[in-house]
Image (cartoon, rainbow, N blue to C red; front, side, top):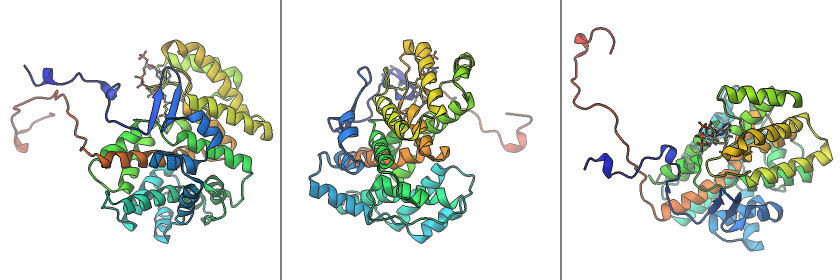
Length: 386
Ligand code: ACO
């Protein structure tokens, strides 16, 4: 028997291969259902807050009123970032990608708050608090500083979403907008074994500190096949420009074997349940602020996309309407994925806790396809190319 035949069958992208056991979230890709700790996402979107949902994900139960208020207060009290982190952000190029700034600043946070004792519950709790609290402050700081504006300090009297919007604009947002953003954070907080979570878990399995875990997950989230799709979807919709251009654009794009951004999912073979809720939220915003051309284009793209791709199980995913929604809120497109990261930090940390509780270093195998026994030729005897 060869070594290769003794191996389990290779699955590109590990599609369908379980990489762990988890009690955090559950997806039914055929039914279009998503649960956090057994509670349907649609219920959380209506009744919960991002703080409460984060507690649920992290500690496996809905908090009592006292517990959620203590957790929220701890987070409020840790929102500020050290001036050296602000200085670091100031030194980054204005034209750089905000996700890179976020990744660099989160990695640097770990140097200020050493958390090598990853199994210590105190270290775990305060790392979680600091990361959930400081990620929005970092994002808002880069948003303002790269424009040459002063950083705005967080306000302790504002909830998570309102405070974030305040740190961007120095204005307390309309409660409807804050509620919509908070719901977006709930919807993006967790999603089983996705690429960024897996990336974070691989890092966690080395017993690296949680700041490093989150920094590695941020790196994976940035890519256009994952969280970066939010930005690319809006750029695609803007490129289309009008409802009339939708069909010829999609035909041309698919003929050129290019993917429709915001469509398709490894697990969902029906419309992503989060996209359904996000679409409704966008419509709620329009009832107050007027409908946008971008949304009209998005609706038509979904209509034509369904017609052409539904038979392959390809439908709108969570990124399809989230970009339109963030655009309606007036945010810069390259920041959309940072909002995703602000939400997913809770999910990443829940997986971090689960991983280190019963840790086994991730060290998968590979199928070697290279050569053996090649002769080393000294450099002076190498003529021409390789
Ligand atoms: N548009 C057109 N065709 C698509 C799309 C799409 N968005 N997605 C998949 N397909 C087609 C592929 O071309 C391929 O067709 P073929 O079999 O004829 O060659 C087939 O469906 C399978 O595609 P894969 O990319 O191999 O499937 P996978 O399960 O890896 O895809 C993925 C998942 C990466 C999300 C893919 O659908 C995609 O690239 N979508 C666009 C990017 C995007 O929106 N990403 C966000 C995902 S949600 C999230 O990460 C939070």
